[in-house]
Image (cartoon, rainbow, N blue to C red; front, side):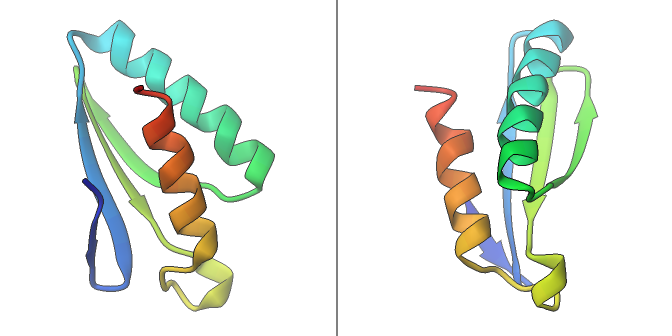
Length: 77
């Protein structure tokens, strides 16, 4: 579940290994590029942490973030 804190949406994802995590990141990158809305994220081995906020709206959560979060979640269904 996405957590909204400090005007940002955040979520951590765990995978079986680095390749699976990186594959997920590649899919997210394609979604983000298509939406022209790019996350802040980190990856360590099998973990991916994603933070979403809309920079051009003053670094707050907007519909762009909620839409992208929903699309990201749909990758795992």
